[in-house]
Length: 233
Length: 148
Image 1: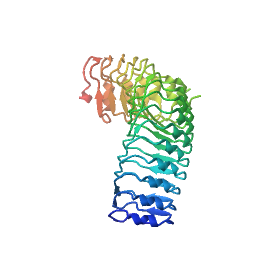
Image 2: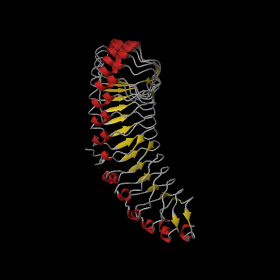
Image 3: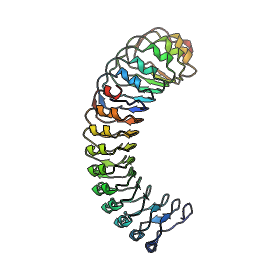
Image 4: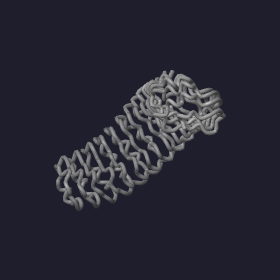
C-alpha cells in the first residue's frame, strides 16, 4: 500500500512480475502516463486503486485477465478509447468506477458478464449507443450511474430484472422512447433520475409499486398524459 | 396498489403533462420538493397540497391551473417557496397568507387573474419575505405601507 504519498512518474511495466500481490493501493498520489498492459499479469490482485492520479491512454484489454479484483477504481482520470469487452470476464468484480473520463464507444454487451457487480459508475464520459439489454443480467446491481453521456435508444424492459437496485441515474443523455412499465419491478429503488433526455409517452402507473422511492426526477423530457392516481391510491 | 408514500422529491417540470393534480397527492406525506412547472396541467389548485407537513417548495408555474388561492396557505407549517405564476388563478389574495408561520419567503403569483386589494395582513410577512411578485394580475387599491 502506497496511498496518500506524493509519488510521481509512471507505472513501471515490471509491476506485471508481482504475480502474487493482492492489493495495489496507489490512491492519492500524482502518477501519470498509461496503464501498462502488463498489469494484466498481476492475476492475484483483488483490489486496485489509483484515485487522484492522472492517467491517460486507453484501458488495456489485459485488465480482463484480472479475474480476482472486487473493485476497479479508475474514476476521474483522462482515459480515452472504449471499454474493452474483455472487462466482462471479471466475474468477481463488485464495483466498476470509470466516472469522469473521456471514454467513448458503446457499452459492450459483455458487461452483462459482471454478475457480481453491485455498483457501476460510468457517468461523465462520452459513451454512445444504446443501453445493452444484457445489463438485465446484473441482478445484484444496487447503484447504476450512467448520467452525462451520449446514450441513445430506449430504456430496455430488462431493467425490471434489477430488483435490488437503489439508485438509477441516466440523466443528461439522449434516451428516447417510453418508460417501460417493468420499471415497477425495481421495488427497492430509492433514487430514480432520468432528467434531460427525450423520453415520450405517459407516466406508467406501475411506478406506484416503488414503495421505497425517495427522489424522482423526470424533468425536461417530452412526457405526456396525467399524473397517475395509482401512485398514491 | 401504488404507495409512493416516502417520496420526498418529485421533479416532473418541463414536460407535456396534462390533467389535474390529483388531491390524493396529499398522501405523499414526505414530499419536500415538488416541481411540476412548464407542463399543460389544468384543473383547480388542490388546497390539500399546502397542508402537507413537509412540503417546502412548490413550483407550478407555466401551467393552466384554475381556482382560487386556498386560505390554508396561512396555516402551512413548512412551505418556504410557492410559485404559481403564469396560470389562470382567480379570486382574491387570502388575508391568512399574512399569518404564515412556515418561513414563507418566496411567493410568485404573477401572470394570473387575481382580483381585489392586497390585504394589509401581508405586511406581517415583511420580516421573512425575500421575493413577492404580484405582477400582471387584476389587483386594485393601494399598496400596504409596510410592504413599500
